Length: 119
Image 1 (tube, rainbow, N blue to C red):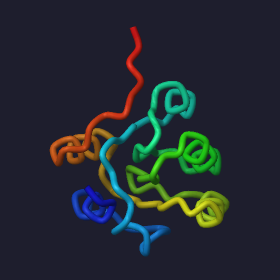
Image 2 (cartoon, one colour; image 1 turned 90 degrees about the vertical axis):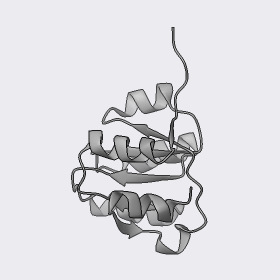
Image 3 (cartoon, rainbow, N blue to C red; image 1 turned 120 degrees about the horizontal axis):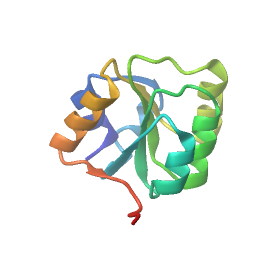
Image 4 (cartoon, rainbow, N blue to C red; image 1 turned 90 degrees about the horizontal axis):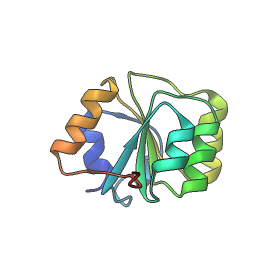
């Protein structure tokens, strides 16, 4: 599905990247407030769902080649985070949904979990 559909499903606001949301394809997502878990377990091309708002979120997205970020719980990213996302061309959305509801809505719409299987 397109990121524009994710926006509708989550009743989200676009913080940055309005012009990109009809082109960005979302098939998988990874939800975490621990960047170490994202780095260890997420696969590339996933949508990152988080309550973290610092610039390290964007650096993590860039390193893993993720497609964008949805900030949950109505969180507003720091100005430095938004500026870095603009420089890197990473779309940012914000939803008032809690993490659990965000995951459930996307899963119900067909978005799969992005994860590296561990034993």
